[in-house]
Length: 515
Image 1: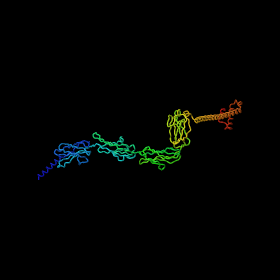
Image 2: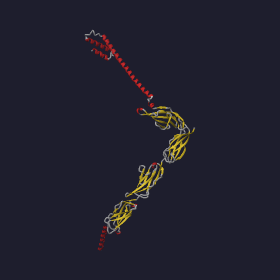
Image 3: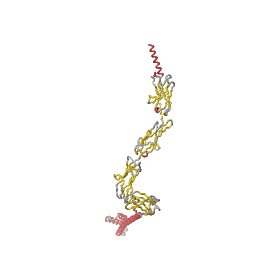
Image 4: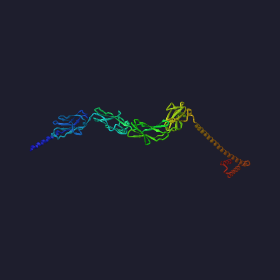
């Protein structure tokens, strides 16, 4: 019994010794951080303090797939083992090395794992091509989405070329990963598109260019302009030549001409204009015309145009205005010609019976149809002479009506007009009259004032003479007191009897004399 107990104690000690001896430390994994697909690469896994009498299995796993080893190595002796691998695309990601004891009898020894090691696996790009999510031919305003698809490659950067020009991102042009999206397209987005895919390994650039794809963004037809001219074929046969013209729009375009609600004619053409011919009666309103234009789902319309031809009639008036330069000399002249009536007039200008057309050395004709025509002149020796204009129907020159003739030269233009002379001299005469009137009124007022003063002086003299006659100072010449008393008595009597008739200054004077 004692022997059995001793055997058990000895076995426990041996087991403790073995378990302590086979404790594995954490391995270290070394290798490249970047590798190319299908290349041969070695990784090194190092175990600190490995056992010398047991095999250690070293395996490399992906972090997210711990059940499938990418490579392995059995460590018999030494600290590290080299694990060769042929790189595949699935090796891309975080790797770890796991060390475990090969002896199954001591399976209670736990395996250990290294820190994670990131491996970037590069697969060169190839097989780039463009996939269009919609049609290659569509109208403006729609969205274009192109996808650059590859047969191989990762870690890719994309760029897009439009007509061999780099496409820059904007609010309407979005580039995300391998997609190019253009919102609210317009005709300028038409053309060839190509995508270029690249990736890099160890400073080596791999590139794949797609073939070009042709995109057509069609332009809706613009609202047409409508106009008509008059054609005379026989003495009494007239026709309206109606033109519908659109400045923009992809061909073909379908034009329709309406008179009121009635469609007159409909035609599809490979041009941006079309001409319609309608019978016409002069001086009669035949309704309103309108053009419709369409080259797709959208239809545009012109303005309504009255179909009414009024022949030229009534007097033709001609007037002018001018520009002045230094010293108020006339430098430029403008003649205006207009007929009283006429919806399709034709204007002609004449200088000394010579027809003036378009532009010359001293003139320029500017027609503002159908209202009037303007003749621009530079003032000089060459432009002196007689001017007049003629107006006729554009479809019948036998109806010409002439304006009055007007002679002009530099001296005539710079001469002061008679009415201006009259105004100036009239104003001058009026000023003289005002000045004369003021002087005359002043003289009369002064004479009147002087007359009143003279009357007052005469009255004073008369009063003084009376007193001098009544008082005889010769008798009292020796008695000054008596003389003074007599004068004061006279003064007091005069003041009491006629105070209103005596001016104050007269009283004062008399008192002074008494003193």
